[in-house]
Image (cartoon, rainbow, N blue to C red; front, top):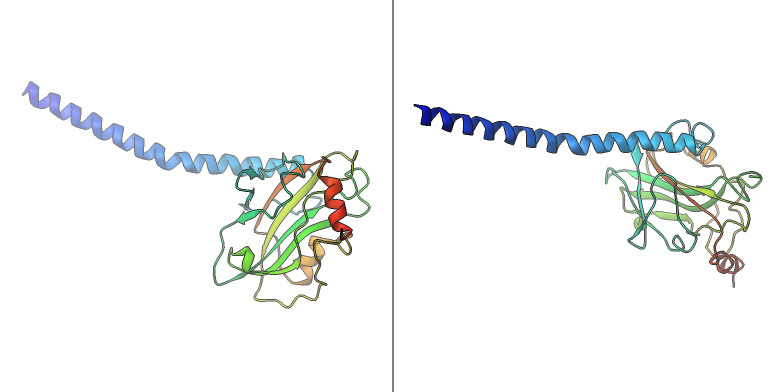
Length: 222
């Protein structure tokens, strides 16, 4: 009998350990997700994007990665050199619906004197689900080019779910010119096409580095 009791105790302890492990495994991703969301809300307020540019934090945090290694992380600092190429943007989407993606800088030419606010860097509409490359490019991607001495600029990515496939009347902009990119308002653009609030977002900061003059030459068509 003592032997039987010992075996039962071992079985019970193993079951308890297994259950605790399963519970911990299930809770851990949830906890990390909640912490990330709290950090996301805090980051947008700390960067003064809520409530000045956005009513509230979008519920989804976009996964934005440059060259497979430089990640946008809720206000982290990246360099113009690191963000010169088109990033990969991932988000949860319905493949049967259409979305709009925007990247915009509210700090043009500087955060202290944003007289050209906003200067939009990228605008893609009619994206089927999360397939950004299959969307309709309204403004080709232009990397960060903050003027020297203007400090950190905020670069905001936003995704909106469209009410359906849309006909956009904006001029199509190439990445060989900076014309028609300033004095943009993503809020007004969203209101014009009944996009509602953004469903996802992310943000990084950048300041001048020695790649910026090269970008300026590109925008001059050189």
